[in-house]
Length: 432
Image 1 (cartoon, rainbow, N blue to C red):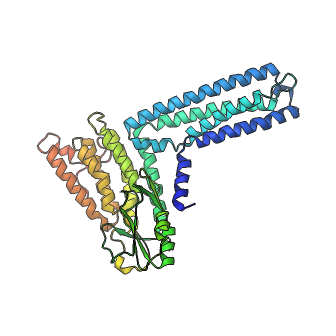
Image 2 (cartoon, one colour):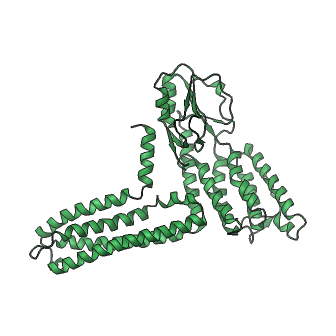
Image 3 (cartoon, rainbow, N blue to C red):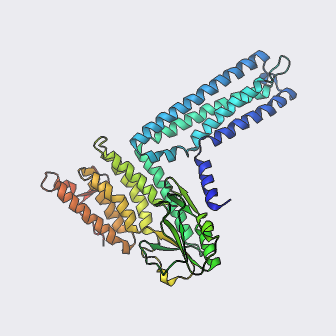
């Protein structure tokens, strides 16, 4: 099984809504078979014994109750998803179907159903699975408790700031993992696009089908390159959508052989959309989507955009302080190994700021919080990256002058305020 197949399978299992409940149902059936035998063999105290009629009534009631609760959980979940995707972004679905609470409550309720149904077959006038009936009650109580936990989590996650915090956390985790990989001795070299090719490639690996690059096996590609004495250059960064037939990677050096294209293609995972695992910029994209949707005339909620900027700033600070060269390694200096194109600091900053500035230019809250974020970044990022921050500040000044110039609130719109409106303000802050 190739690396890309394993990656996609792992993602499918993690995001699937039916695998965990199915495991719960099988577990409930197996537990019912075991409990029916143990409950008739072992002698329990009088307080844990049931008459045949009582056991049948309890089990039948639990079967009906568990089925009803499963339907109720699914209905509530659909309503929550409908509200969340309409308020935030369709990409919120990724957070929902990875939530352990939803899968756990379904698994326990389905296990309760199969356990109860299995035990019903073993209730006789002179033989009652007392242990199993007691377990059914415990399972039903656990299912109700998990449903309350799931409902609490889902309701709290309907707040835009909570979704932004979750996405920012995933982005930070992906960034830390990328930095950890970059610190290893066998880490691939990086080069920002565009780059100059070191000559004619011996092999061009092309896409068999279109898809977004979700992840790459950097270690496997690097080992393959060193073993074959070639230089493997990935043409697109993780997150790009590449059409069928387009160049995916180039191989420079000796002829790698007829099996090379298949081997190299198997170390790149493709999908219908981007993922955050190796793509922190996708976390930025989702947070920006939430902010600009809040700034649409139909919603008109600039406070949400300000709260998203709080978490954007936190993630951008990590990116701006990361020791990843914005210039990369010249390809002419490399003979073997793997070269991966990366995003520059300016790419992350442009993605984070441009659309929020464009759609939020008429909100004093947004322009003031945006200025505060840029000034803070100007003080905290690496010195060689402050030029991009100053450029964004210049663009913000131009937008504020164009939108608010000559109005009664022109002086307020030019201030820096970390709360948007209501916090301590300052006119300018040195960023040099």
